[in-house]
Image (cartoon, rainbow, N blue to C red; front, side, top):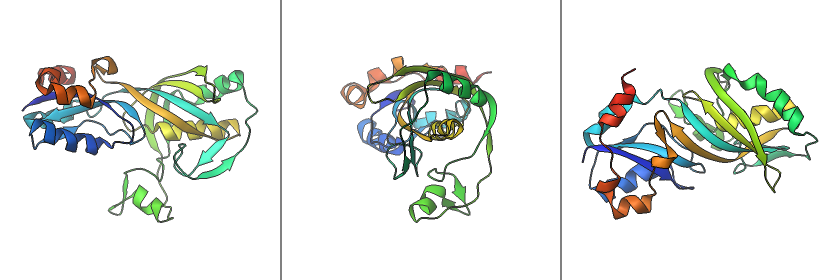
Length: 230
C-alpha cells in the first residue's frame, strides 16, 4: 500500500514503535517517517508507506511547529521532566523577565545538541554513551527559530511556548537554555508537534482510527510531492 499517513502519535511510543505497529495494521513492510518525535512527545508524525518511503527526501527539511511547556527552576540530565533531577529551586522570575530573554533565541542561532539524542559519535549514539554515564564534546549546530511566543501559565506553574523552527531543533535544549539564560535553570515538561511543513495536527488520525479504517485515513502521495516542489 503506497501512501501517506498523518498520525497523532501517543505518549510513550517511539516513532519507530508507530511504524512497527502500522506494518502489522497495513500488512506493508516498507514504512518510515519524515521526522522523529521523542517517546514522551505527542502529535504529528508524518508516515510514508510502500513506495512512498522514497518521497521522504521531499519533507526531511520541512519547518516544524510545536506547543511546549517550560518548567523553570528544574534542571535534569535529559533536559526534560523525565530525566534525573540535577538541581531544583523556586524560580523568582515572571512574564516580563522571560519575555526579555526569549529574543535571544529568535532567528538563526547555534544550539548545542543534548547528550540524550540519537546523534552519533564514533559510531555510537549519544544517548547510549549518556546512559553509561559518559559525556563527549559536541559542536553547536546552526538552527533557526522563526517564531517563539510565551503563552499561558498553568496550575503547575509551567509556561506555555509556541515554537516554529527548522529541522534539527531540540525543544528540550531550547527550554534548558532559556532556563540557563534566566539564571534559575529549566526543562521541558510537555511537547506536542502541531505542524510539519504543509501538514497540520488537524489532519492527523489516532492509531485507533487508523486501525478501524486504514484506507480511509490514507492520503495520496502527491500531497507530499507537491509540498516538495519548491
